Each structure stands twice: as structure tokens, then as C-alpha cells.
Length: 253
Length: 192
Image 1 (cartoon, one colour):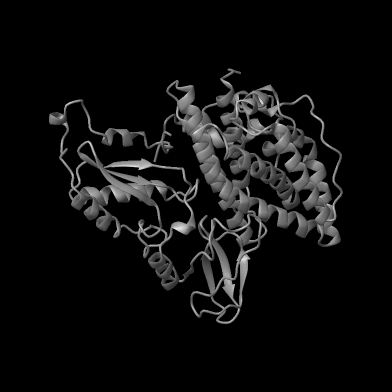
Image 2: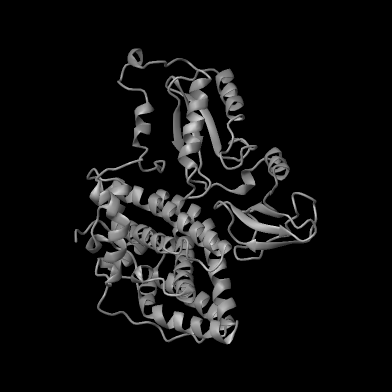
């Protein structure tokens, strides 16, 4: 995997995570439990694709090798994707989807709050716009986690299983690597420890309100989404998402 | 800051005057305050595609109109990051300006400060209500981020007895509500 400057690496992490999360959400189209839910999931997905475009536009300009945001999204292989492992995990049932969404929303929310203060004006501008949208996402996913967790016996069981299913992938949300440390020292992004603390506080508050047990902190393991070492699920997702551009390069309509 | 540019819209740079000589720059001329004023008037008639009764000016999407280097420049701020109407709106604005006689107008996207519903004019809010969409309640800058929704009144009968059906409605900018008195469902323009 090509290594870029720290800022580009970071833009790809945030942008790729939003692309993959948006694509996963689209899989619910036509399958959601209720029409209103379907509209909500698609709207969240749309917000994320829009945010991804803003991040990847900037990344493409900095990479400056002739590729644009579309080419970054549609023509990079799995190994070149920097997204979080959490967002590439399959949707599972609605509880798994909401567990993933909630952990991701809480991470985005606290990260974006810090990015609004970024020393990089473009990053701050994109973050300010995204934060308004993500605030809505977080409120909604928090409500669902509580409604299911503190609901019927069945919904509670499903929510417990949902949290259990994806919890191990949350290590990437709470542990910064050297790229992030350097960017934080330069004032471009908030300190990873600060995001981690705020994330843990939000997660603990909502899980507790949902009558769920807060699991022990997830520890990192051999996979590493931020460095392009993904679980087996990302390749399949990209194969579907990228098919058209791969089969008919530069197709437009 | 460089304006965020939409993918697939790189042709937008082609609209900038070509060549270094003003003499070769087709349609370039000195603009006046009247031209800028007239451009604002033209844009007052460009409607949002999703809410065809409210103009892009009243929605607060057009941030600035000015004259530079022989051409009219318009600055627009998109509503939501993923709003699929953004490119269509920009295209419509450009067409309206060209049709009004402004040669090669230059459109720029500005992300910062981020668009807020606080920028929707009083007139725009009235038009939303008349169209059957409840306008945003309160001020986005004053609300606490995770607070619940404010009281949203039914745009049809004015009743306060309404309930939220879904946080998201037919487009990203709206939530779905229902009136418990007249029983009509309605869209609420979210306050962000």
C-alpha cells in the first residue's frame, strides 16, 4: 500500500470509512423493517456519501496524481482502503446494524467536534458541515440502542448480541496510531486520547441507559483497517460497489 | 480556503475566462452595482427543486454576488453534504444568470461557514408553511446538540398536537411528522 503524507492518510481514513458505511446502509434499501426506518437509513447513508465526497475531494487534490474523488472511491483495491474495520462488518439484523451505527456515530461526533478546531481550514470547514448531520445520526442511533436494549426480552437479547458481535472492532476508535499522534501534535486533529475518552463516556452512558453491560475495553488485534489490512468482508462490498466503474471505466450518466 | 468542488463538475473551471488577455475573454465587461442588484433579483426567481416555492436566495444558499474581472461571481453554500440537488441547483442558477444576459458567470462553492437553517428568510419560512412544510423551529446556533425537538406546529391547521413519525423524511433536510388534530402527515424542515 502506498504511504502518503499524514494528512492524506487521515483524510482517506475518514473518507473511506464514510464511503463504506454509506454503502453498507444502502444494503437495507428495500429490506428495512418499516418505511420510515428505510428512509432514515438511506438519508444517513446519503449524508455519509456526501461527507465522503468532501473528504476524498480534498485527499485527491493533495495526492495530485490526476485521480479525483470518484476514482479514489471506485478504483482502489481493498488493500488501499483505509476505513475502520467496524464499518465494513456485515449488517446482521437490525440490532447489529444499530450497534455498529451507534459506535460509529459516537466516534464521528466526538472526532468532528475536535476537527472543527483544526488548524487546517479546509478540514475545519468540512467537519463543521458534517457535524450538524452527524449530531442527528447519533441522536437517532442512541435512541434505537436504548429502545431495543430496554425493550422486550427479545429486543434486549438481540441488542446484547449486536453489541457483542461488533465490540471487538471498536479498538480502532479508541487507540490512535503514530499518524494520528503527529497530526494531533500539529493541531490538525484532536488528540486521539481525547476522542477515546469522550467516546467511552457516550457509549457507557447510552449502553447503561439501555440496560446493557458496558464490555471491557476492546484490544487491538492482527487486523488493521487504517493500514489497509481488512477483514474478509470489505472485498465483497467493494466488488459490488465498484463493479460498474471497473466493467465500464469512466462510465457516466 | 479552496472551495470544495463536486466530483464530476471539474468542467466548472472551464467557465472561468480563458486566456490571459481581456480582449480574448468573450463577454467580459465592467459590471456595476446595478448588475449585481439585477443578479440578486434574477436569483430570487430560481426555486429550490425540492421546495419549488422557495427561492435559493430565501433558503440562504446564495451567499454572495459580486463582479470580478469582467464577470459576475456567485457564491453558493450547499445545504447538506450529501444533498443530491446541489449540482442541479448550481446548474439552474448558472442557467438563470446566463439567460438574464450575464456572460460566463462564475459559480463558487463555499463550505465555511456551514449552511444553517437560521439563514432561511422570514419570507422563505412563510412560503414553506404555505407549501405544507413546517419551517424550522428556533435557532440552530442556540440549541443544545442532543436536545429533543421543539414544539412543531401543523402547517395545515396550526395545531400544537403533533408527533414525530420519523427523524428523517423524504429528503435529508426534512423530518416526518403527523398532526393529531387534522390527522394530516407533514414534513418538518429540520433545524440544523
